[in-house]
Length: 118
View 1 (cartoon, helix red, strand yellow):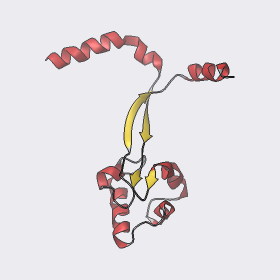
View 2 (spheres, helix red, strand yellow):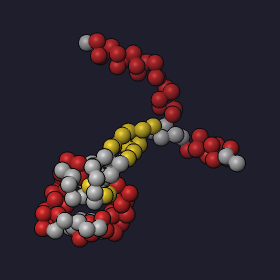
View 3 (cartoon, rainbow, N blue to C red):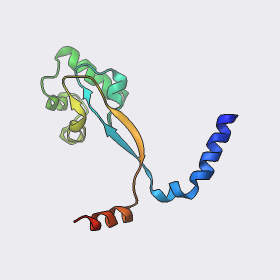
View 4 (cartoon, rainbow, N blue to C red):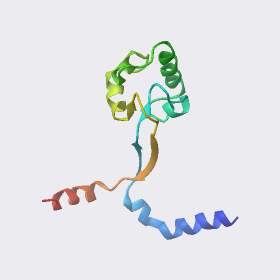
């Protein structure tokens, strides 16, 4: 009950300011190790679902990835999709991918910010 009141109070305090600030967008930071990531971690990648994650795992069981570009050999991953994912792919190190919802600034604010920069 206390949590419900806290949420209600938070919405009242934020009020129209949140709506005016902009819409929520998804932000991806970090990388996924193609050779070690779990299906759940692979599923965090934009545009990758459970089935695609399983296809990646099946592919690497047969032959581990030597280069991230080899992802296009997995069914459902073409050049276009690969280019969207490339910044978040790795072959070594831990999987650090984080998915967050952030408030995107309004286009008007972005345009004004760009005009002010020297």
